[in-house]
Image (cartoon, rainbow, N blue to C red):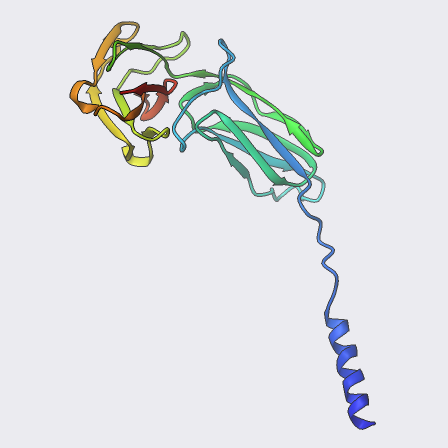
Length: 226
């Protein structure tokens, strides 16, 4: 009998310690693209440095002398961003830290479930590339009107994987040839031939990048089969 009483008391104490988790869970998704205001195309960058969407919650639960912590949503190389771990609510949203000029102001966005918003920007540079023969390309680097920086460098990139770009600190995912550049090279067509860099029987993925303010804009990726 004594053992039964001890057992029941222990069970009662244990049950009182176990409480249902009633904390609210994130219930909103904020997603969209960072797009070129003139072409409507996504801003292509490397996997890092693709722009950061910054959210600051607007809520009465924060006193006047305090502010909520910023929520930063990093973009990806395709120009898209997405975060599915956000609470419903009203937020201030802005955009920074990318190879572009953000043309808008801080906006107010109400998140309730899935919410999409595209940010319009002016890229620091636009890069057009076309294939030229079996192992060559032609490319043009253009600086849009409204951008004042100087062209610093051009990189011709290639890889046997579909991912080819420059990571942080110019760490190359693939192979790169860096070309010292200046603004006199803008709006001019240049040629590059990969020649003996390519081996027969392999697939290669190539693109061109150009830097301004230490940040890189990219062309589309092209496929060359040998």
